[in-house]
Image 1 (cartoon, rainbow, N blue to C red):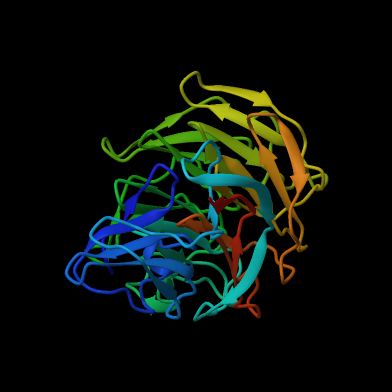
Image 2: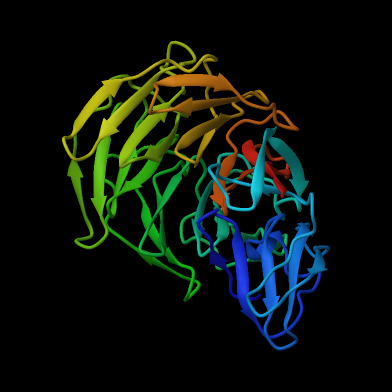
Length: 375
């Protein structure tokens, strides 16, 4: 992988390479259509016209050593707009949400959890027909799965969160509600037992804000509104203000240091609730309901927007906290419930969800590109 830099246009370039680009200088390395590559050894320059993984296409251009010559009437696509010397603005085009199948999870599971460290997704625990302690890592850049050291305590319907490069697997169901808190170190591929969560729960959700983990909702035997804060530095728990609406099998996501708890089951029905928790003030605020009430859905954040996916459906709905509004996204390829979700390099992965469904669905969120013609 060659070193890339981000230009003010937000497109990765390599302006100091020592050789020509190959088919492997691709989207997995962060390159996009429009990326520039300069081979300073041969004094040649290239532009990427197709960033497909392991099949990238780079065209040689005039100039080199930092000087580029574009052909007249060349059409360029940029992620930002504004005056660009020597170029004429033509308009914009919207690239819609796009779903694709990637390599399936090695072992299909329901009620698993997923966390990301160093651009790899770790899928942990769940239900394979029995309680699982499986730990499998997915590398989106290579589209490969690797089996890692199993979690100490087999569990389903647990939650996880990351602090300082370590994954904390919290709560779950082992035949009864669990308060287990186990730390996984991907570098050492090892597990350590940490202080138990105060209130044993499963079907909960966890999110991280400013180095602390918030374990919210779930089932204790009855539906819970508990909010408990874990400090990995002090290895200690603190009780925080309860969530407004008790819910289980909900999902959560973080935008601008606030946690949004969405959907779930109240014990009397499926919920569309969206409630915002501010850890800095320990307060809850009710936000606009999700259009479709769902439980067992999963959530992920791209560009400060929350994508809520599945929940015994293939529905995708997108929440914008800045406007407190929802829009309908592009339907998933396969109906799911109790899947795991994660984001790597701006793409969302929705993984497994039932003991007979090992699918790995990748979403490239919609974007707008701005078109310019070379004068």
